[in-house]
Image 1 (cartoon, one colour):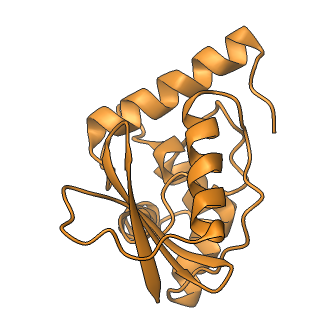
Image 2 (cartoon, one colour; image 1 turned 180 degrees about the vertical axis):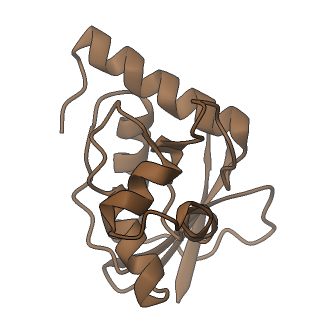
Length: 158
């Protein structure tokens, strides 16, 4: 897997890819190595920045999820959560046919290789509280707030 690192509002964004397929989208603290930027990574970065500005509600990037079958099932379910909405860990567990798997859903979220593309930030605790996010709770809070603002302003486009 090749990678490129870009700055974005939350620090540094690592884009892992093979050819024109996205494999990893991850917030990192710092990077001494910028990796290898390509037309593909520039497209990914552009779409992410459009999303962060509230100008995009979905992504047109080819991606591949690498994980266990159970993780992939959960991640696929996360992609069904509409922009601007949230679901609880329990709701995701029920949706995949395993109502007692709330903790396993949380563990799979923690392993999500494609933050924002697979919107694990839209999963919240049963009590409505924000819990766990690979990019940190401040980033999760801001992503959810941005989506709500974009929906109210009705200026987000796909």
